[in-house]
Image (cartoon, rainbow, N blue to C red):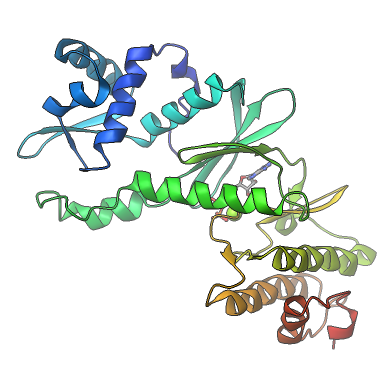
Length: 302
Ligand SMILES: Nc1ncnc2c1ncn2[C@@H]1O[C@H](COP(=O)(O)OP(=O)(O)OP(=O)(O)O)[C@@H](O)[C@H]1O
Ligand SMILES: [Mg+2]
């Protein structure tokens, strides 16, 4: 897990953020930003830059490397600090609390505001990028795709899906978005995969999940990563979260992904509750979602 930098934010000064955002600018052009270019990117004197780079490096917000030149790059901690600084300036959040979850490609924290919020930092592209590029460090940077870009794109896609779907679909209410991070309402519930439903709840909950999938489709999206780990079940029903990979319904693979999502959900219920949910025709179910005629899982149960 990337270190939580919320505690460092208070100690950072405006000039530290200039240097961090200068590096962010520079990283659009090369993976390691040459030391002598940083004053221009951050609009600070060379001397000031030297002082700020040291401060930020000590806090793990950036990394230095000597290749053919001395270069610097942001770490994820540095990128997190920039996003948190923006959220704080906009009063979107007042503080960062305990971790809520570590996904394969994200870190999620509680956040404080006038209501309970969740803060999700996307981490896509990081490890993959590191491995792929280890061999390429000495080559030119012409076509480099930075992890900054990959993580930022994922957050943008997720936020866009939330904004489109909320409130028609039961998703966390989107609150703010910056760089690779999104702020949304915190859902006080457990993941479907960690819940134990009473016999009489099983089919109604399956229906609720399928109804959300049908509404999602009607609103123009397929989730594309549906599983018992991306659905919350609570006292006020189900909430579907984790949307960065969602595709529009006119995407060439949308129908295939809808079938896969349906199979994943139905398959989970069949494995966990074989008595309440015996054989299900997932293809026919997916088709009813696509045709906007889904009403209940009953007709599809064997
Ligand atoms: N809005 C929220 N409210 C409360 N907890 C949340 C919220 N969003 C995410 N979480 C918690 O954080 C965990 C990771 O979130 P999410 O599934 O969005 O991330 P991910 O990295 O994309 O996951 P995956 O491992 O499925 O790829 C969730 O399992 C959940 O426990
Ligand atoms: Mg998830």
